[in-house]
Image 1 (cartoon, rainbow, N blue to C red):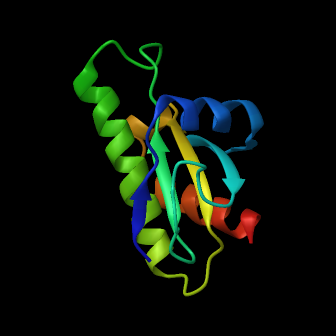
Image 2: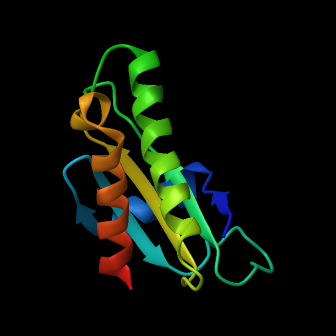
Length: 118
């Protein structure tokens, strides 16, 4: 399954207000079932993933981007193992721990989230 991009201020704000929250050791995920409202004719079983990393995490944009990339990549690899998933919107907010921890810890968080949703 391929991850699609969740973009747009209105879509992200709606997800922050109305989404369910899941908290892990390395990331926090706000999620909703269904496709974003700005997508016409959504393909079946698609994950729309966006990331948000505040300056409060680290002043360095390089480190914040690394946290985002690690969390998104862990989700991409974990989703490849699942054959059937519902259409979901995800907004991933990495935690400071995602920068210094092992990559396997981030993957465990992604697996724990998907098992929670299913």
